[in-house]
Image: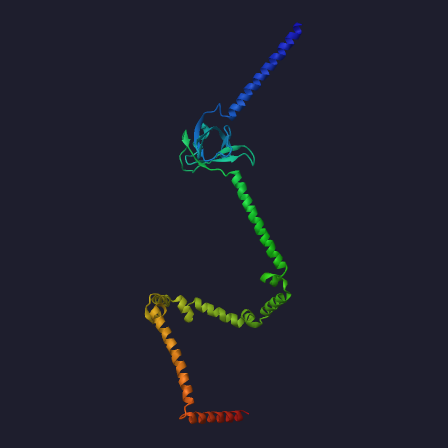
Length: 318
Protein backbone atom coordinates (compact mmCIF):
# COMPACT_ATOMS: atom_id res chain seq x y z
CA UNK A 1 0.00 0.00 0.00
CA UNK A 2 2.78 2.41 0.89
CA UNK A 3 4.60 1.51 -2.30
CA UNK A 4 1.55 2.43 -4.38
CA UNK A 5 1.19 5.77 -2.62
CA UNK A 6 4.85 6.60 -3.17
CA UNK A 7 4.60 5.83 -6.93
CA UNK A 8 1.52 8.00 -7.14
CA UNK A 9 3.28 10.85 -5.39
CA UNK A 10 6.29 10.52 -7.72
CA UNK A 11 4.05 10.60 -10.81
CA UNK A 12 2.13 13.55 -9.45
CA UNK A 13 5.36 15.43 -8.75
CA UNK A 14 6.69 14.74 -12.23
CA UNK A 15 3.41 15.89 -13.72
CA UNK A 16 3.42 19.11 -11.66
CA UNK A 17 7.06 19.86 -12.54
CA UNK A 18 6.42 19.21 -16.26
CA UNK A 19 3.31 21.39 -16.20
CA UNK A 20 5.18 24.14 -14.46
CA UNK A 21 8.04 23.98 -16.98
CA UNK A 22 5.58 24.06 -19.90
CA UNK A 23 3.75 26.99 -18.33
CA UNK A 24 6.99 28.94 -17.84
CA UNK A 25 8.07 28.17 -21.43
CA UNK A 26 4.69 29.26 -22.77
CA UNK A 27 4.88 32.53 -20.84
CA UNK A 28 8.45 33.06 -22.05
CA UNK A 29 7.60 32.40 -25.70
CA UNK A 30 4.46 34.54 -25.63
CA UNK A 31 6.33 37.24 -23.74
CA UNK A 32 9.07 37.34 -26.36
CA UNK A 33 6.52 37.57 -29.14
CA UNK A 34 4.66 40.36 -27.32
CA UNK A 35 7.88 42.10 -26.18
CA UNK A 36 7.02 41.60 -22.49
CA UNK A 37 10.67 41.19 -21.49
CA UNK A 38 12.25 43.81 -23.81
CA UNK A 39 12.25 47.59 -23.27
CA UNK A 40 9.72 49.13 -25.65
CA UNK A 41 8.43 52.57 -26.68
CA UNK A 42 5.14 53.67 -28.15
CA UNK A 43 4.39 55.05 -31.63
CA UNK A 44 1.06 56.31 -32.95
CA UNK A 45 -0.51 56.73 -36.37
CA UNK A 46 -3.98 57.22 -37.83
CA UNK A 47 -5.81 55.64 -40.76
CA UNK A 48 -9.08 56.30 -42.53
CA UNK A 49 -9.66 52.52 -42.44
CA UNK A 50 -7.54 49.87 -40.72
CA UNK A 51 -8.71 47.24 -43.23
CA UNK A 52 -9.00 44.29 -40.83
CA UNK A 53 -6.03 45.14 -38.58
CA UNK A 54 -6.36 43.73 -35.03
CA UNK A 55 -4.70 44.21 -31.66
CA UNK A 56 -1.69 41.94 -31.33
CA UNK A 57 -0.79 41.95 -35.05
CA UNK A 58 2.89 42.30 -35.83
CA UNK A 59 4.73 45.49 -36.75
CA UNK A 60 7.59 45.08 -39.23
CA UNK A 61 10.56 47.25 -40.05
CA UNK A 62 12.93 46.26 -42.88
CA UNK A 63 11.20 42.88 -43.06
CA UNK A 64 11.74 42.11 -39.34
CA UNK A 65 9.10 41.94 -36.62
CA UNK A 66 9.97 44.78 -34.24
CA UNK A 67 6.73 45.22 -32.30
CA UNK A 68 2.99 44.66 -32.04
CA UNK A 69 -0.25 46.61 -32.40
CA UNK A 70 -1.18 47.61 -28.83
CA UNK A 71 -4.41 49.57 -29.23
CA UNK A 72 -6.93 50.58 -31.91
CA UNK A 73 -9.25 53.52 -31.16
CA UNK A 74 -11.93 55.10 -33.36
CA UNK A 75 -11.43 58.87 -33.08
CA UNK A 76 -14.26 59.99 -35.39
CA UNK A 77 -16.11 58.93 -38.53
CA UNK A 78 -13.02 59.42 -40.71
CA UNK A 79 -10.05 58.59 -38.46
CA UNK A 80 -8.85 55.50 -36.54
CA UNK A 81 -5.87 55.75 -34.18
CA UNK A 82 -3.43 52.83 -33.97
CA UNK A 83 -0.87 52.57 -31.14
CA UNK A 84 2.22 50.40 -31.52
CA UNK A 85 4.76 49.02 -29.04
CA UNK A 86 8.21 48.94 -30.69
CA UNK A 87 11.49 47.49 -29.37
CA UNK A 88 13.77 50.16 -28.00
CA UNK A 89 16.76 48.59 -29.79
CA UNK A 90 15.44 49.58 -33.25
CA UNK A 91 14.53 53.20 -32.38
CA UNK A 92 17.83 54.69 -33.73
CA UNK A 93 17.10 53.20 -37.16
CA UNK A 94 13.55 54.54 -37.57
CA UNK A 95 13.58 58.13 -38.86
CA UNK A 96 11.09 60.88 -38.09
CA UNK A 97 9.85 61.01 -41.70
CA UNK A 98 9.09 57.27 -41.77
CA UNK A 99 5.59 56.23 -42.83
CA UNK A 100 3.31 53.41 -41.72
CA UNK A 101 1.33 51.22 -44.12
CA UNK A 102 -0.97 48.24 -43.65
CA UNK A 103 0.17 45.02 -45.28
CA UNK A 104 -0.49 41.32 -44.94
CA UNK A 105 1.48 38.16 -44.31
CA UNK A 106 1.23 36.53 -47.71
CA UNK A 107 -1.79 36.82 -50.00
CA UNK A 108 -4.48 35.86 -47.48
CA UNK A 109 -2.50 36.08 -44.21
CA UNK A 110 -3.07 38.24 -41.15
CA UNK A 111 -2.81 42.00 -41.38
CA UNK A 112 0.31 43.77 -40.09
CA UNK A 113 1.89 47.21 -40.02
CA UNK A 114 4.91 48.08 -42.16
CA UNK A 115 7.19 50.95 -41.12
CA UNK A 116 9.37 52.48 -43.84
CA UNK A 117 12.96 53.46 -43.12
CA UNK A 118 12.61 57.15 -43.95
CA UNK A 119 15.27 59.34 -45.52
CA UNK A 120 18.93 58.77 -44.74
CA UNK A 121 19.64 62.27 -43.41
CA UNK A 122 16.63 62.49 -41.06
CA UNK A 123 16.99 62.30 -37.29
CA UNK A 124 15.84 59.21 -35.33
CA UNK A 125 12.28 58.97 -34.09
CA UNK A 126 11.25 59.92 -30.57
CA UNK A 127 9.00 58.12 -28.12
CA UNK A 128 5.23 58.61 -28.46
CA UNK A 129 5.69 60.28 -31.84
CA UNK A 130 2.92 60.41 -34.43
CA UNK A 131 3.88 58.91 -37.81
CA UNK A 132 2.29 59.65 -41.17
CA UNK A 133 0.32 56.77 -42.67
CA UNK A 134 -0.32 55.39 -46.16
CA UNK A 135 -3.92 54.39 -46.72
CA UNK A 136 -4.34 50.71 -47.69
CA UNK A 137 -5.92 49.55 -50.92
CA UNK A 138 -9.22 47.93 -50.06
CA UNK A 139 -9.74 44.44 -51.45
CA UNK A 140 -13.31 45.23 -52.50
CA UNK A 141 -12.17 48.28 -54.47
CA UNK A 142 -9.39 46.24 -56.08
CA UNK A 143 -11.83 43.50 -57.10
CA UNK A 144 -14.28 46.09 -58.50
CA UNK A 145 -11.47 47.66 -60.51
CA UNK A 146 -10.43 44.25 -61.82
CA UNK A 147 -14.02 43.55 -62.84
CA UNK A 148 -14.17 46.80 -64.84
CA UNK A 149 -10.83 45.99 -66.45
CA UNK A 150 -12.04 42.49 -67.31
CA UNK A 151 -15.18 43.86 -68.96
CA UNK A 152 -13.12 46.32 -70.98
CA UNK A 153 -10.78 43.53 -72.05
CA UNK A 154 -13.79 41.46 -73.16
CA UNK A 155 -15.12 44.38 -75.23
CA UNK A 156 -11.73 45.00 -76.82
CA UNK A 157 -11.27 41.28 -77.50
CA UNK A 158 -14.67 41.18 -79.23
CA UNK A 159 -13.76 44.17 -81.37
CA UNK A 160 -10.41 42.65 -82.30
CA UNK A 161 -12.13 39.36 -83.16
CA UNK A 162 -14.58 41.27 -85.41
CA UNK A 163 -11.72 43.09 -87.15
CA UNK A 164 -9.83 39.83 -87.72
CA UNK A 165 -13.00 38.20 -89.06
CA UNK A 166 -13.49 41.06 -91.54
CA UNK A 167 -9.86 40.79 -92.62
CA UNK A 168 -10.17 37.01 -93.13
CA UNK A 169 -13.35 37.59 -95.17
CA UNK A 170 -11.69 40.23 -97.33
CA UNK A 171 -13.74 43.13 -95.96
CA UNK A 172 -12.37 46.63 -95.59
CA UNK A 173 -9.17 48.09 -97.02
CA UNK A 174 -6.81 45.84 -95.06
CA UNK A 175 -8.90 42.75 -95.80
CA UNK A 176 -8.84 43.51 -99.54
CA UNK A 177 -5.10 44.13 -99.44
CA UNK A 178 -4.52 40.74 -97.83
CA UNK A 179 -7.20 38.61 -99.50
CA UNK A 180 -7.57 40.15 -102.99
CA UNK A 181 -5.07 38.38 -105.25
CA UNK A 182 -5.28 41.12 -107.91
CA UNK A 183 -4.20 43.84 -105.48
CA UNK A 184 -1.46 41.58 -104.11
CA UNK A 185 -0.19 40.86 -107.64
CA UNK A 186 -0.25 44.58 -108.48
CA UNK A 187 1.72 45.40 -105.34
CA UNK A 188 4.20 42.64 -106.13
CA UNK A 189 4.59 44.00 -109.67
CA UNK A 190 5.14 47.53 -108.39
CA UNK A 191 7.77 46.31 -105.92
CA UNK A 192 9.41 44.24 -108.68
CA UNK A 193 9.47 47.24 -111.03
CA UNK A 194 11.03 49.40 -108.33
CA UNK A 195 13.64 46.69 -107.64
CA UNK A 196 14.41 46.49 -111.39
CA UNK A 197 14.68 50.27 -111.78
CA UNK A 198 11.48 50.66 -113.79
CA UNK A 199 9.12 53.58 -113.45
CA UNK A 200 9.80 56.93 -111.81
CA UNK A 201 10.36 55.59 -108.28
CA UNK A 202 12.47 52.70 -109.56
CA UNK A 203 14.69 55.08 -111.52
CA UNK A 204 15.03 57.38 -108.53
CA UNK A 205 16.15 54.47 -106.37
CA UNK A 206 18.21 52.45 -108.84
CA UNK A 207 19.71 55.05 -111.20
CA UNK A 208 23.15 55.98 -109.80
CA UNK A 209 23.18 59.30 -111.71
CA UNK A 210 19.90 60.45 -110.12
CA UNK A 211 21.05 59.22 -106.71
CA UNK A 212 24.33 61.10 -107.16
CA UNK A 213 22.49 64.26 -108.16
CA UNK A 214 20.18 64.00 -105.14
CA UNK A 215 23.16 63.46 -102.86
CA UNK A 216 24.91 66.49 -104.39
CA UNK A 217 21.80 68.64 -103.96
CA UNK A 218 21.46 67.58 -100.30
CA UNK A 219 25.18 68.20 -99.75
CA UNK A 220 24.95 71.66 -101.35
CA UNK A 221 21.96 72.53 -99.17
CA UNK A 222 23.83 71.32 -96.09
CA UNK A 223 26.91 73.40 -97.05
CA UNK A 224 24.84 76.51 -97.77
CA UNK A 225 25.32 76.43 -101.54
CA UNK A 226 22.65 77.34 -104.05
CA UNK A 227 19.48 79.34 -103.42
CA UNK A 228 17.87 76.83 -101.06
CA UNK A 229 21.12 76.22 -99.19
CA UNK A 230 21.64 79.96 -98.67
CA UNK A 231 18.05 80.35 -97.50
CA UNK A 232 18.58 77.63 -94.90
CA UNK A 233 22.18 78.33 -93.81
CA UNK A 234 22.60 82.12 -94.26
CA UNK A 235 21.37 83.83 -91.07
CA UNK A 236 21.03 87.17 -92.88
CA UNK A 237 18.65 85.72 -95.48
CA UNK A 238 16.76 83.83 -92.79
CA UNK A 239 16.44 87.08 -90.81
CA UNK A 240 15.16 88.91 -93.90
CA UNK A 241 12.59 86.18 -94.54
CA UNK A 242 11.48 86.39 -90.91
CA UNK A 243 11.18 90.17 -91.13
CA UNK A 244 9.21 89.83 -94.38
CA UNK A 245 6.78 87.35 -92.84
CA UNK A 246 6.52 89.48 -89.69
CA UNK A 247 5.66 92.51 -91.85
CA UNK A 248 2.91 90.53 -93.59
CA UNK A 249 1.45 89.49 -90.23
CA UNK A 250 1.60 93.12 -89.01
CA UNK A 251 -0.16 94.57 -92.12
CA UNK A 252 3.07 96.13 -93.38
CA UNK A 253 3.83 96.43 -97.09
CA UNK A 254 1.64 95.74 -100.09
CA UNK A 255 1.36 91.99 -99.51
CA UNK A 256 0.62 92.54 -95.83
CA UNK A 257 -2.18 94.93 -96.68
CA UNK A 258 -3.54 92.56 -99.33
CA UNK A 259 -3.49 89.64 -96.85
CA UNK A 260 -4.64 91.36 -93.67
CA UNK A 261 -6.73 94.41 -94.76
CA UNK A 262 -10.34 93.34 -95.28
CA UNK A 263 -11.18 96.67 -96.97
CA UNK A 264 -8.69 96.05 -99.79
CA UNK A 265 -9.93 92.49 -100.15
CA UNK A 266 -13.51 93.75 -100.47
CA UNK A 267 -12.44 96.39 -103.01
CA UNK A 268 -10.60 93.79 -105.07
CA UNK A 269 -13.69 91.60 -105.03
CA UNK A 270 -15.79 94.56 -106.23
CA UNK A 271 -13.27 95.32 -109.00
CA UNK A 272 -13.32 91.73 -110.19
CA UNK A 273 -17.12 91.74 -110.24
CA UNK A 274 -17.13 95.02 -112.21
CA UNK A 275 -14.57 93.67 -114.69
CA UNK A 276 -16.67 90.59 -115.23
CA UNK A 277 -19.78 92.73 -115.81
CA UNK A 278 -17.85 95.02 -118.19
CA UNK A 279 -16.53 92.02 -120.13
CA UNK A 280 -20.05 90.66 -120.54
CA UNK A 281 -21.29 94.09 -121.69
CA UNK A 282 -18.42 94.41 -124.22
CA UNK A 283 -19.30 91.01 -125.69
CA UNK A 284 -22.88 92.12 -126.09
CA UNK A 285 -21.82 95.38 -127.76
CA UNK A 286 -19.54 93.55 -130.20
CA UNK A 287 -22.34 91.20 -131.13
CA UNK A 288 -24.67 94.17 -131.74
CA UNK A 289 -22.05 95.85 -133.96
CA UNK A 290 -21.72 92.69 -136.07
CA UNK A 291 -25.43 92.85 -136.85
CA UNK A 292 -25.47 96.60 -137.57
CA UNK A 293 -26.57 97.48 -141.15
CA UNK A 294 -23.67 99.88 -141.72
CA UNK A 295 -20.94 97.45 -140.57
CA UNK A 296 -22.49 94.13 -141.65
CA UNK A 297 -20.70 94.16 -145.02
CA UNK A 298 -17.33 94.73 -143.35
CA UNK A 299 -17.69 91.73 -141.07
CA UNK A 300 -18.93 89.53 -143.94
CA UNK A 301 -15.89 90.45 -146.10
CA UNK A 302 -13.60 89.76 -143.14
CA UNK A 303 -15.25 86.38 -142.62
CA UNK A 304 -14.82 85.47 -146.35
CA UNK A 305 -11.16 86.48 -146.25
CA UNK A 306 -10.58 84.27 -143.18
CA UNK A 307 -12.26 81.29 -144.85
CA UNK A 308 -10.14 81.84 -147.99
CA UNK A 309 -6.94 81.90 -145.94
CA UNK A 310 -8.05 78.76 -144.16
CA UNK A 311 -8.59 76.89 -147.47
CA UNK A 312 -5.17 78.05 -148.77
CA UNK A 313 -3.46 76.85 -145.58
CA UNK A 314 -5.25 73.47 -145.77
CA UNK A 315 -4.15 73.05 -149.41
CA UNK A 316 -0.55 73.91 -148.58
CA UNK A 317 -0.52 71.42 -145.75
CA UNK A 318 -1.74 68.64 -148.06
